[in-house]
Amino acid sequence: MESDCKFAVELATRAGKALAAHFREDRELLSLRKTVKEITTKHDKESDKMIVNAISEKYPAYNVWTEESGVINKGSEYTWIVDPLDGTVNFASGNPLYCVTLALLRKNEPILGVTYAPTINELYVAERGKGAFLNRERISVSTTEKLEECYVYFCEGGDKNRLRTGKINGAIYPKVRDLRKLGSAGLEAAWVARGRGDAYVTTKIEPWDVAAGVLLVREAGGKVTDLRGGAWKTERSDLVFSNGRVHERILELVCGL
Image (cartoon, rainbow, N blue to C red; front, side):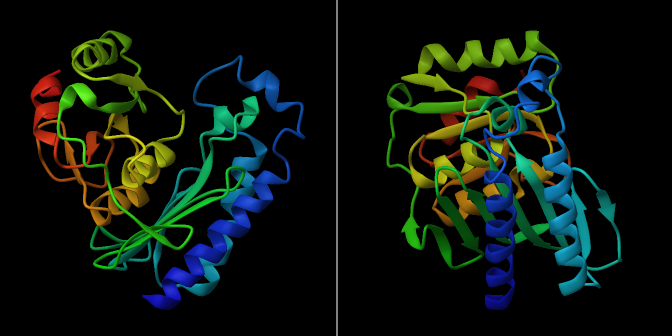
């Protein structure tokens, strides 16, 4: 696992720095943010190509699953799952909250997760059973126990039903201190692991957006389930990430919505 972790950190860092070299330099990106939420830039594709090539060379027998390339199935019990640029709209808008995420799964369970946000210089790493780290310092979820004191992140992921997501927001917002949105699922999960937020609720989120974050939050002492309390699965789903202490209270608010 040590060599896998080193590889993932170096690759995420290399991809992130390549993205950062174009951040706020490509003026054509500004026009994209006026089109649709689910935009893809040439930088997403270039980052994806870099990462897939590196993984395929180092781990030719492993499956690879990325947002841009889809699934490369080698029949292995190991799968690298990747978002080469999480927070594309932020990136296109000149917002520094974007990242690269890589996770290594064994039998669909994350055993290694890396999230790198180059512009804000944050590198999150988690290995199963070894804890979660930000820039090599161990991190843990918040100790908040009262729902009314919670800062909660929300994103609608791939859910296009604004009436539904509005109901979920409406159920949560009156009960917590504040409801916030970063525009990057990878960072919203990582910030719960870091204790900057107490929970993160997302709907119809893709697995590449959160696979690394699932392990980060778990290893930081938190909890991740679907809205009914079920385990995370490698499919598009509704999820709650939390510090564990307020998890059941949040599920009570959103279950069935």
